[in-house]
Amino acid sequence: MNDDRDPRLDDRQSDDHREAEHQGDESGRYRPDPYGSSVVLLPPTNGMAIASLVLSLVAGTGAPFAVIFGHVARRQIRRTGERGEGMALAGLIIGYLELAVLAVAIAVLLVVLAPFASDDTSSAYQQYSSATGGAAPSYAAQPRYSAPSDATTTYAPPPTSRRVLTSTAAPTSTAPSTSTAPSTGEPTLAGADRQGFAERGARCNASDPAVAIGYTPSSEVVVCLTGAGRYYYKGMRLRDLSAIEIDDPVPSGDGFVADNGGGRYVLSSSALTIYQGSELVGTEPMLGYWAA
Image 1: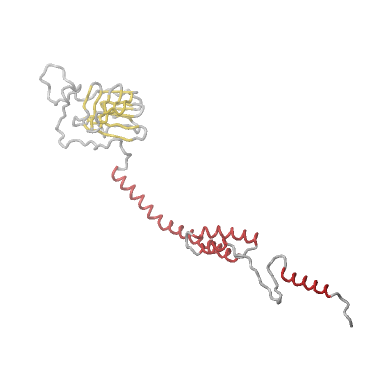
Image 2 (image 1 turned 60 degrees about the vertical axis):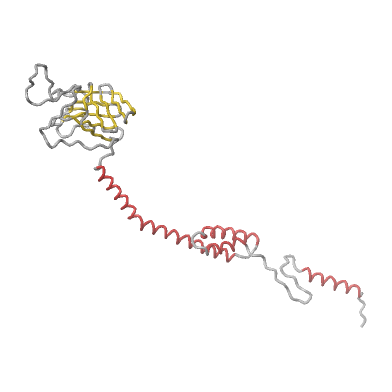
């Protein structure tokens, strides 16, 4: 039987077949060769997925970055078709577990250390209370006044003083004498009595009478007389109720001068003047003043 086909047509079909075999499919993943075998081309592995897995193995500091890179890698893999889904997922799981363990460790540490912090604060407060006697700090630390052990000792201010304390013996001079006892008149200031301010203010100790009482916009002051014939000065700052007490103020004019070695308080019917050494610290105008 004779073959009537054109040999040139057979050659052309054979060429077309070989070209199709070399071109492969559109994706380029499979490329058949002339001998019938195929080569599989795999997509690359996502770099973020690799970084997530590596960082998750770095305990502590790497966990947050492993979680971040893991989420980014999974989004990129879904978009590009790259490999590494398993590594990204593993990095996420390990990273979240490390963060949870870290949070629990911090919470346990805080619970364990809380009693020690409370004890330290309590100890510091007790030391402060012991040092200050539980009172508010004063704006000039001074020793509290204590009466002399010898009750018969009398105190005589300088001759220039307006008050002169004398013995109980009758004076031999014909000149009029000055009584050691303060006036029996009651203070005319509101809220004050014979010992100073009645509520929360500057006030004489025990039953000592006041010989001078005054108040300014910022302070309350009182000068008291002990049974032994000695004066002492007490002041209170109204802003924070800080108190000060100074022994042996000296009468001057219509008031007193109290000196504690570093600060000096000049009390008069017109003002309370405060000095630090030779430097004037401030002058507070007197709003009310009474003297025995």
